[in-house]
Image 1: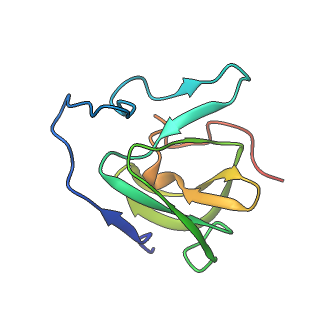
Image 2: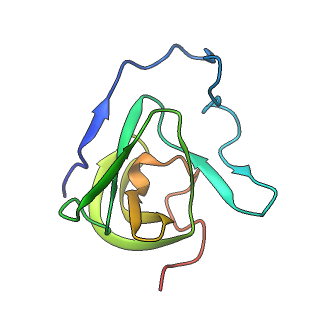
Length: 117
C-alpha cells in the first residue's frame, strides 16, 4: 500500500463557506445539465492527477481544494489510503487523467460508474 502524495492544507471550520467556492459538505454529487456527475474532493486536500492508476504514473497536475471532478469511468490500480478510505479504485476524470478514489467523496467504497476500457 502507498499513500498518494497530497498537499494537506489548513481545513476550514465546519459549515464555513468561502465566497466563490462550492460547499463540499453539501450533497455528495452534483449533476450537470449534460448528465455528467461531479464529485467533491475530500475537504482540505489538493489532489494529484496522474496519467495512470498508480503513484508511479506521470504527474499531470494538482487539483486545488474544493474542486469537484467528473468521473468518466473507474478502474482498479494501486491501493491508496486517504481521507475517504483505503481503495484500489481510481477515477478517470478526463482522457489520460486519473485520481485515487481515496480522495474523492463518492459516498461509496465501490464503483459508482462504469469501469474503464
